[in-house]
Structures are given as C-alpha cells and as structure tokens.
Image (cartoon, rainbow, N blue to C red; front, side, top):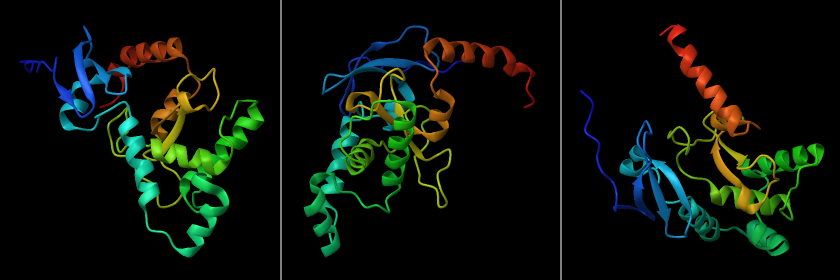
Length: 202
C-alpha cells in the first residue's frame, strides 16, 4: 500500500515557501519560492528532513560569515591585508579546486569571471551546501584527494562560463554524471537507465 502523500502546500521550510506540488513527479517534488525570489522544484523529503532550507543563498551567507569570523593569526591577518576580502589559505582544498578550474577554463577557452583564484575559492566555499542537492548525502572532504562525496563546482548552464550566477556546488559524483550534458542528453540517459535496470543484477 502506497504511503499517503503529505501535502506541503503553503508551508515554510527555512526560507522556502511551498507554492504547489509538481504533478506526476516521483518522488514527490514541490515548487518552492525562496525569500530571495529564486523559484525551484525541491523534493519533499529534502524539505521535511531540513536538508534544503533555501536556494543555497542561506548556505552562502553562513559560509561567508564563517570565513569572516574564524580566528586569525598574524600570518592570516597579513595575508588578508595584502589580498583583501578575497583571501583564502593556499592549503585549503577550495584553493586547489579554484586553481584547477581556472586552468581548465583557460585551456578550453571558457570564461572565468573571478578576478583571482582566491576570490573564486572564497566564493565557491561560501556557496557550498551541507548536503548534495542531487543525492542528499552529506558533502565531505576526502583524506587523500577528492572523492565522489566531495563538493564540486558545476556550471548550471554548460554553454556559459564560470560566472557568479552560473555556478553551483554539488557532489563530485553528481557532477561527473552531469558533465557537459544538456537536458536532452540527461533525459535520454535516464530513459536508458530505466529501460535497462531490470536486466542488471540485484
């Protein structure tokens, strides 16, 4: 017997206001409006368990606040004085990610809107949610390099470059699957998976 659908219409979850259910969606998804004005479909389970509380603007603000408020030693203060608000430790994994992203963007002729690696790293880190928006598991840093559960910077529209309004942070697993595919590619892949999955061993 199927579980009874919990109607979330009109409820608030963090900064999300639930407008209506997306028809024929499985699992159930709801059209949500963030306090900042962003609208997006969100899984009901993400809303109820609290893993999605905004369009990530809340995560960005919390991350930026954490960066601003963390304890500083003399070397940190000197570095921030040299580089301003864009400063981030060169030992931070996000600095390494930003280096790799800038180098790949240059090699591929893709726009990289950020004025410096530090500025990009600081922005990406502040944008990172606690949970992968695609799979729902907690994003974690690997002890030796990056792994499928590591945060990864994704261009929302792969036809555009690394711009402030065209990047999001998802898991490396999700980003690898998405790659440079467009919506038609992803729909074709999903249809193939659904048609072939009964043949796969359980």
